[in-house]
Image 1 (cartoon, rainbow, N blue to C red):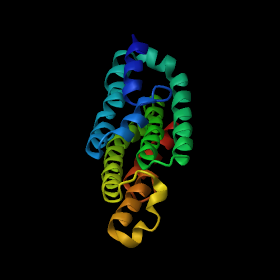
Image 2 (spheres, rainbow, N blue to C red):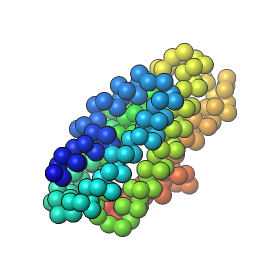
Image 3 (cartoon, rainbow, N blue to C red):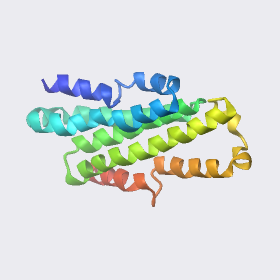
Image 4 (spheres, rainbow, N blue to C red):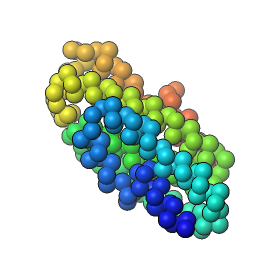
Length: 193
């Protein structure tokens, strides 16, 4: 029963290796739909893990935690490596989202107060950060007519406020100290360690 619930939430989360739907869905959807899908709806998977898997199946959660943590760490590294190689800005945001969900799942199944608090806060911060990234990417795409990152060379000269805002939101996604995602990612890493 735990594996059934966990599989359903892992697909929704999206967690490695059940993540394959997310990049295609994010790349093909409108910016507003992508904001709702990744910024809001994906949190249903990790919320379900916290709210249903852990309380209903505590022994099974503890039993499968090492395997889930390994999958979460693979997802963190895999999502980040695939994000580096993207040429499409929406796919880049989607793959960074997969990496961030690896941190959230890692924090949930590390079973420490810090990591679970960090995971819960990460869900909120990831929603704001990813929503901002998709909204700003949507502005850029609608103005330029292209999703390719290479087409945006020199955008700071044409639209400096938009480029500066995109930089700040991107650094928040990177978990730069002083921005929203740093606290949650730090709590997850400290609690998991």
